[in-house]
Each structure stands twice: as C-alpha cells, then as structure tokens.
Image 1: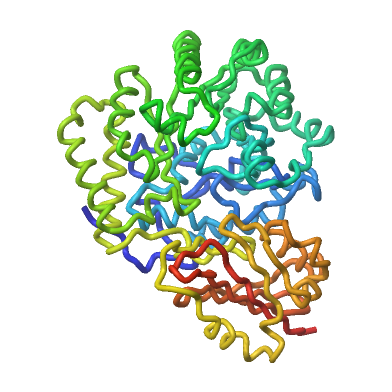
Image 2 (image 1 turned 180 degrees about the vertical axis):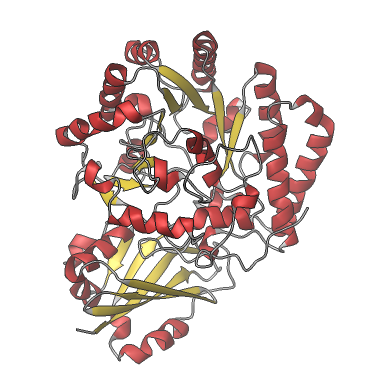
Length: 514
C-alpha cells in the first residue's frame, strides 16, 4: 500500500478530495471544496467557542461570551476559513486532517460529506444561510475519569485529578433564544461531552428540538452509565441515534480505562439502547478509542459488535502521549501490525460491517512503518494556543542553548520571559518578565491554560495579524505579529535525566513595532 509524502504539513496546501473515496458520491453543490464543515456545520465547545468542526480547535470562529450566535455564523473568521478551504489551504487549524492524510487515512472531513446533499436554503454565493448540523459539546459534566481524558471533558477529572475549579457556565438564556432560529433548519445534531445525559444544557437543547424539529437526527455519544426517566423522555420525544463508548472487550480492561465505570451496567444499557434503535428505525453504534492499552482486544470487540449487528467507529488516541499508539516504539508497532494482519486473515470474512474499519488501522500502521515512524500532530505546527505534544522518551535533558540562541537577537533579557507548562497545557510557572509582557499578574496566569497566554497577549495588543512557524530539533520556533508588537516564541520540552518530558518551557521575547 502506498504512503503519502512526508512533506505534507499543515502550512502546505493539501489536496485531499481524492482520498474521500468511500461511500456514494455526493450530489454536486455550488461550492467546490474538499471539506464542507465550514459551510454547513457548527461545533459548540464547553468554553463558549464556536468552531467549524470538532477537531479544528486551533481556529475558533468566535466565542459566545463575546458575540451572539447569528453574528458568529457567517462572520469574518468563518469567511476566512471558507476561503482557505476552497483554495485547499489547511493552515487555519486543519492540521488534524493533514495528520490523518500523512498517516494514510481518509481525513476526518469525510464525515461532513453528506451535508453536501442537504445544503438547505443558500445565499446568492452558494453558502447555506444556516448550518445543517450542529455539534453540541456544551458541558463537561461526567461521572467517569477515563485514563485518556482531561478536565475540559470530564468534571470529575477536573475536580479530582486536576484539582481545578469547575468550568464557568457560558450558555445563557440569550444563547438558547438565538438557537431557536437555527434548530428548524437542522437535519442533524450530535451531542458529546462529558456525559451528555448529565449536562443540564443538553436537556434544554433537546426540549427546543422536540418543540421545533422533532424529526431531525439526534446523535448522542454516551458512556452508557445513565438510564432513568429523563433519558427515557429524550428517547421518546426525539429520533435518537445512540453511540455507546466501549473502549475494551473485557471487563478488566474496560474498567481500567474507563475509571469508575461498571462494565455490567454499561452492557445492560447497551442492550437497552440497541433495542430502542431497532424499534425506532435509527442505528446504535459503538465508539472505540484505540490505544496501546487496548489494541490487543480490538479484534474481539469487532467480532462482538458484528455478532450484535453493530457498526464500530474507531478513533485513534493522540494525546496524552502514554495513550497514543502512534508513540509506540517501532518494534512494538510491528508487533501490533503483525497481530492485526493475523487476526484479519483469520476473522476478516466475519467482519461484514466492520472489516473496513479494521483494515483502516492496518493501513494506518503500514504507512507509519513505511515512513520509519508514525507521524504525530506535533509534526504540524500548532497554533499559538497549543504547546507541542512532546516525545516522552528522549536522549536526555534539554539544552537551553538553542532556545537562548534563537532569542538572542531580541536582546539580553529575552530568556527572562519564560512560562512552564505541563503536557496537558496547564501553566506551572511564570516568570515576572513573562507576566509583565502579557499584561497580567503571575498569580493570574499560573494554574491557567496555554490559551490564556494568547488571550492575555490579544487583550494587550489586539488580534494577531500573522504567524510563522519553524520546526527545529526538539523545539518549535514561532513568530507572532500584532499591529504594535512582534513576539518571538520558542517552545522546548523539559526533559529529566532519563530523557522523559512531561513539561515544556515557552520562552519568548517581545519587540515593539509601533
């Protein structure tokens, strides 16, 4: 099987239409674009961000705390993203699809292809007046602490593991009033979390859908722990397509990964949700996160699903790094590949529904091996809101010399501006110089997230007008330009004596240009 060039990078236009080969060809629309999400989809995240899709977290279209929903849909940032995508330019946050292409996979953008056949009313330029799909991720309310998850998606993790205060509530009455104009135009809505059946905001959205558009498709990805009268009421009033997260085949592995879950309870609720889907004429589906901790059970899970008539969607975990199969040693990846090939040869004829999903993983790993190592998302320059996803295992401690050399041209005080963050993007320390440069107090920044750093710079200088990124050995070198200033930023992993990196130093210098 062929592999794609190692030269694919987020900053390079990538033509991906030819990789959208699975399934029937969509009916033509007036817009020729490799991804239809910016034209007909809207994703809502817990912090109030409105995005084009669930994987583009680097280029928000706006935030509900700063603008109303009708202003964000069709606004200036969305226009920029649409223009880039039409020109096959994936530099506005679309690194995930570039990463999947390089890994030999069909890009995630493929899931929005069906919206091309359901564009709805359009403006003279062919752009839909309203989204046809909204992805709701309104709440991090969750009763589980899954090993690969984080506090922005689990309130339990945020409280117990991260020791952070609850996320603020941003979805106010005005938002839900504005949402009323959008719901009648939807053909589909999806809900994730957190656990959707624990989020009060979701029930409020479902009530509106039952009132205004009860026949639309409602996809709910649930951890399977909830079954009560409130859940039953949602199932009774809407056309729900239940997606059940099942990250292992055995009880032991499942309860290790999905901490605080009871496998027996989940299986009983899987029975209930599948029976509901069969009765209503919708479709139940298993959602599976593939990682080093569960790959040995993938074939058994697929066979289990096949026997029950359930399709499986496989998502490859990319972070945290300990749960990213792409970060496995080459020898281990070769063993995974050999196991998958052997299992497919033995059982592939039984996998009528899920054989293609299994083959996708085999193809992915074959491409990684052919490229000598798996590409990871850190290979593509992330936006300023993100830190690099480090290789955990390295050659030894980081030498500060390269970072100091990069910043030296900006003046002798350049390295005084240092922020240390952990692998999850939490600010661990902040030098007084960095806090002063960002216009915040040290105590205001420590304990926050990396996106708070960009927010602080934006609050002080306005929106960035340009970004240039260069990847070096064990560092990322970035120039961020504002109307009145230029930031030179160097991000380096902080390794211990054994070569392990769980933190990064963000060193930067500021040059006034006004």
